[in-house]
Image (cartoon, rainbow, N blue to C red):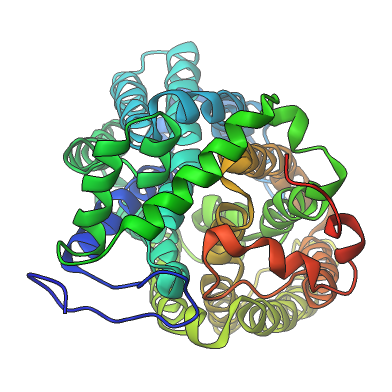
Length: 503
């Protein structure tokens, strides 16, 4: 039993993996940095449907909407409007690549704090924006903030959590992203009626930023990060705090020291090391998993859910309510993942979620093709609009317990300590780059492909599900320092990692 809490011993770990009250609180506080990313995803889509906001910054969209017989898929197809949403992702991409060095130099915790402060500044500028330049500058600062936190937080959670329950703790990050999305959708619903509502929606982003930054200041850094920076005494204190004050942490500390010494002895630039043959499997996963996560279509559906539902026949109010329902379904399904991921494993969730999402995307495409016609000018009936919402919710549930949380978890747990921050940086950068391209093109694609957009995503979901079935090894319950064995046993990847000396 851990002092002051309950403890569960984890077999399949070389150290006693115990859940203590301290580790639970630490992980919840760290995971709350997902709030800022979630809030931003949710707020952007809602604000871009608010008439006063469009009137001030993007009047051309309103002019297009006023034209008679506008194709319902094309109303919001504006490159300037899209650049408002996607400028954040270019900034996030740049920040995430810098973040691996920052994380290695000043630690995971301090990187999260920097991210929170930068996001706070961006939220304040956006709330007070007087022109498009201020709007885009605010978005860029938000992007820097999200880039830093998305890089540091999953690594933090994987390093602090007991190996047996690492999956459950890591899903907390995606859970807070989903809370941010739902909160933002609710705020949009409340502010949509007011002429200054968009300012409130954008400015209130300072609230999640203050919550997560304050929280991050109160937790200690991860033992791995402290050992890496030579702070051995602090690392021991941190280990005792998260493993329970009566735990014997000497073995785990010795293992962390050994990993750190191996890394330092190599004297290699991490961005060079990661391209070595023995790390090919890790690198492929760090690129493929976030790339595929975005090609499920979830983020563009989350950004543009209000726009999307308005396009298929919901009024402005009911479009925002539909987006809230979608967010709540996603939230509930992440909880399912938390309880299942360490019991049935990562692959099982990936496969089940992939099949579910594929079926739903194909069904949405069929419903829209049948009801709105190939041109997209026919009006969809209320009944069919509700059917689209139900299918979207089933799709969101499939994502919520598979690709949602797992694509943050896998890259943060597969790398050895010396290249873990670098691996996570590449993963987050790929996530942002893919999101940028998709968010730049989604509204235009919706305009030209119409219902075919959903078939496009269904095709990618089929590809990624087959990829996971063939190439992703199971990593549940395996300590971070023993992860090599997973690749050595894999039918395909073993040719890359076998017999390779440790640098």
